[in-house]
Amino acid sequence: MVDASTIKVTGPGGGKIIHVLGLATPPSTNGCFATETVTWAKNTLAGQEVVIQAVSDDAGVALASVSMVNGGDYSTTALKAGYAKYASKAVEKTVGVALQAAEAAARTAGNGLWGPPCLGKIDTPPTSVAPPQQPVAAPPTTTRAEPTTKKTTPPPAAEEPDPPKAAYYPNCAAARAAGAAPLYAGQPGYSRKLDRDGDGVACE
Image 1 (cartoon, rainbow, N blue to C red):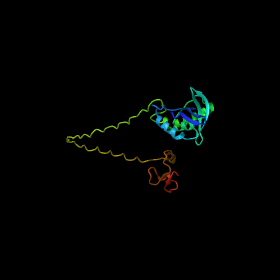
Image 2: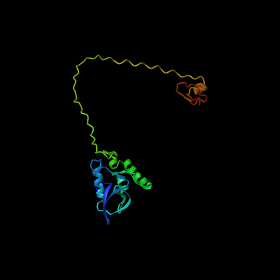
Image 3: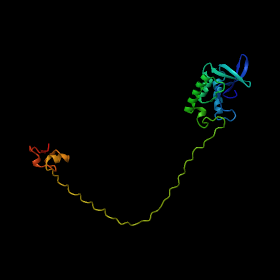
Image 4: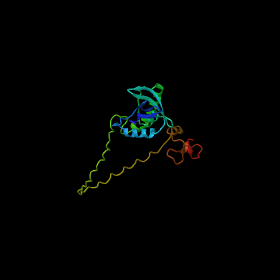
């Protein structure tokens, strides 16, 4: 196995190197997430029976789709898990739509090479992100206050509230207009002349 998208298969006609359609994987020398991708590909394909559907030859390397007898389409599986990016070269339109959907799902979930530190960039080595430094707290300083003598000023005396003004309503219409009706005996504004039936409730 050269990398996760360039594999060697052995069949009745002998061995052949195949480039898997629809995949672009990290360079095995210095690509971001390259080690994880190659390890996954070896664990997935080593010793497995696969079905090869050749499309064309490019500079002596066969382009083909690879289906695992016991595990579905290899390209779709790699893209969904985030071990490869989609490459459109020689891919049929209907197949490309499904592969792009698999890649989009991995990108949204941040799977594999779509998560940190690669964030989708596979052609350069991973960049290590230094953790943020914790701020160092300054040692507490002790200040000694000089004793001072303060004069205590008594609080100002509270002002006496004005005595409530006695309510007076010349008639029930005025009481109703003031929102005071009905008036009960003992309430401000109650008067015997407004209580016609003398039951203690005026302007009923």
